[in-house]
Image (cartoon, rainbow over all chains, first blue to last red; front, side, top):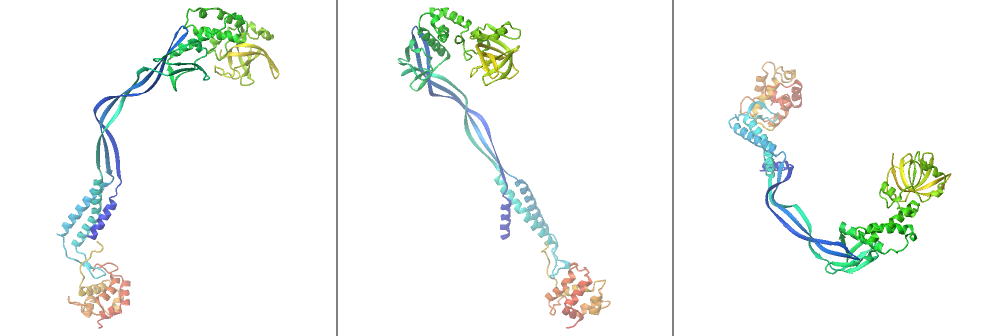
Length: 420
Length: 107
């Protein structure tokens, strides 16, 4: 009994196989599909329409309706457990135990007569053949039984577990504005610095704002804490309304009395208001543009758009209407001998960057002449303007300047690009 | 299997086994000198020891003493036909004077 206990202890110790476990999920058939609707908080949408001297705002509160399509599947989570080595132990254990059994049976037919041809040091004859066979049976069984038990334990630990479940997944989700309703509350129009331009209560989701209140650009349209979203058309209409309000607010009188900046803003308002008042006299009056052009040709610096207003070289050329051209072989280069009278005149230039004196002052070489190029703090253009780069420039001449040993004409750059 | 062994050999067989090993050829000279045997070594020593009958029982020396003194003779092997070395034979006769006296027939 003690011996058997020892065998089992050995077997359990040997039966501590590493059990490897692998899991996988297998999807089964589709059980059902269904749609589920839900409603989410939305926002405020605004429309803008101009009617004469009134700007009508229509604000609609909308929710977001979501429709999700679900599919439900059967799913099996399969876990396979395998005790490594259990199979080999089981096979060898079975073989050894069977072999021990065979030897035990064979020993019964083997002679039990002692081996009288030898007498050991203790005075005993040699073991009978039966004793040898029985000893071999015990040894074989002693090796095989623990392996057999260990193999059985490992086989019991191995196996497959299957757990069936259901799983649901979203296959599609669609959202759309829904449940529109006229908003209520106090509609506020604010300028860029937060200044209040207009405050009107909504009546049935609409409010009428005097056009005159929009002489400054509208930065935000809010209802309480919420921002009213304006689509592109509403934004265009609002910008045009602001231009018309600014146009209406101008002081009538002789254009020649207006400053260059005032005239420029007047022309911009006229252009901005045109979509709303296509044939109105204040929009079609050509005298504004004509006066601006006259001043630009006369070299009025403030009459020219700045670089931040032009968005391309060609737009800068169109806006400034240059009358001078500085390039290799150009006859206008001679005018640089006396640059002071040229101040305020727009010019184009083709040359090579000769050096940089600071972040926004460079020197350009045109044929045998040099000029200072003065760039704005934040130019709207980009390119390779390192020393040696060939450039095309449109700008406004601004007298003469001395930096170190050099005294050169100055060209305030409106636009610059790499060229030729 | 190393622990497997048969029944005890009788005292008579043990006595005859020692005599057989002492007399095994080529006989060691110390056997002839100290035990005084010549041609029929086995027969002479068995007769002196009176251990021919199957019912022979050791008295003096005892069985255990006999086995103790026999030990050097089985170093070359426990088979009854194994021939011990003469150094083993000398060791037995030197270390076991009671066995020597027994084989000389001295009681």
